[in-house]
Length: 351
Image 1 (cartoon, rainbow, N blue to C red):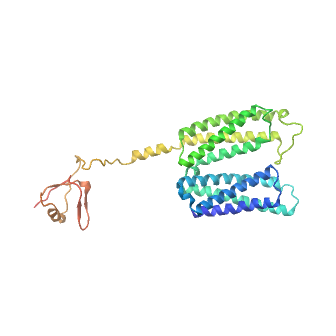
Image 2 (cartoon, rainbow, N blue to C red):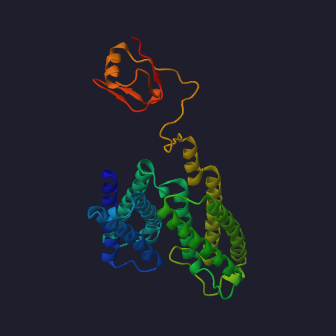
């Protein structure tokens, strides 16, 4: 777990430098600036809380696997957010920048943002190798990716179209919200139980894939009908995208999430569930009947003949009879004494 602490500290310091420089410059206005600051703040707060919980051993009050699932989930979201900020930040802040001091601050913030991304990715990779938590596996990471893409869809769809003027998009928004809530609830359940319900995830992922497929059509139709979407006062946003371009991005993200839900269905079909693994362990586990203290002797059981050197000890131990019945599997000869536990194997002593 030493490597986990190193990645925590690296991500903590890097994200702190990134959003600290931008806030100090006081030029983070706009949707893109607020988004970048939110991504770095989420990385900083998540790393700080995780590090404090481990230092003061607050995590010992919960199960170890649950704590690792929480760490993996936070690191996965932080890695995606920092990656998002590292991509859109230079396109918005460094393009056409004439202030040399602010330009140098942006370069430093971009470098540390990439370092924070690598730190969180390294933490997820270490969890995937060392721990057995569910959120570090492929299905768990797919759940995180699905919710992240849904949040990106909300960001691009927010200012692209008026839902009052286009009721068909309400169905798409309802699909995105419903799938986002159900997927996030699945993440919480899997983190608590450290396993998945294969029947629930298989059915939900299949239904969500069909719903995403149906939601992409209204948005695609509206993106083609530019006369209904683009008004006379429409213009480019902070990212340089027109409203119809934002809708095309929403369609692309919808198709990507559709593929991720189909991939989750395939994973649920290929990977065995935890209940099946427990049943297989019970089947391969050797059955022992402890209620019968003296099991009967089988027909294939042969007679055990003790060494001649131990015959004298047996004669002294059994003073009442020369024929003693012992069980072969329960007879243990130890140096320098002999321990006899049961009487099921017949020992013949020749005088």
